[in-house]
Image 1 (cartoon, rainbow, N blue to C red):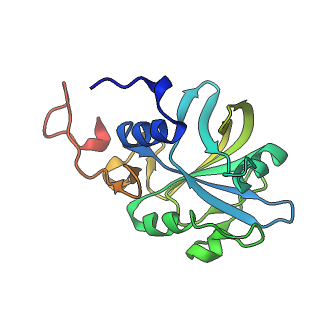
Image 2 (cartoon, rainbow, N blue to C red):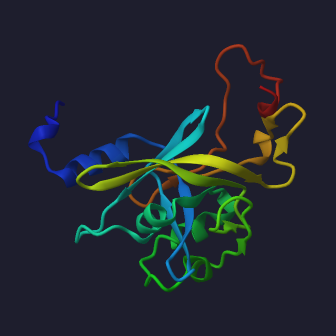
Amino acid sequence: MDIDFDSITEYQRYKLMASLIVPRPIALITTLSENGVVNAAPFSMFNMLGEDPPIVMVSINRLDDGNLKDTARNIARDREFVVHLTDEAMAEKMHRCGDRLPADVSELAHAGLDAAPSQRVAPPRIAQAPVAFECTLFETLETASRQIFIGQVRWLHARDGLIDTDTWRVRLQEYFPVGRFGASFYVTTRDRYAIGEAPASTAIDEI
């Protein structure tokens, strides 16, 4: 099958790309509204771009009327945000943060999540998240349908015991993030295997 992307609609391209380029990591992002309300929303067009400087990327689509979503508007204005990785324990609450709410209502309260102070940015982090990256805006790209924010990581929060700072290894045996599949489907990361030199007896967090 061959498909000419110039001959199909934007929606058709989205459906194909979003269901084929999987699994995708999920960024649950907190920002602050102009009135100080904590906004939280999940985005799966997200990934790491580099380590020097440490930068991550999130692509946020515009609303049907062309306006920016609350998260995009807040990042563009304040140039600060916190990216959280979601694990199995908080996956359903992350999904609830995607519900459409008025701008003056916090998704954290709606989903049953708790805010905790950040160190370098104003938006709080989510206490239940296993990982939180405090970011400042590094660069913005814009397309007809999306705002693409590149954030520089300024501070990392990780669940106690998740990182061995003697070896700088993540204890992957204790880390179970979820990824986005197609539509409202998600995948876990429990099915793991090594390719190459790692012996079968080597613990996954020692590779």
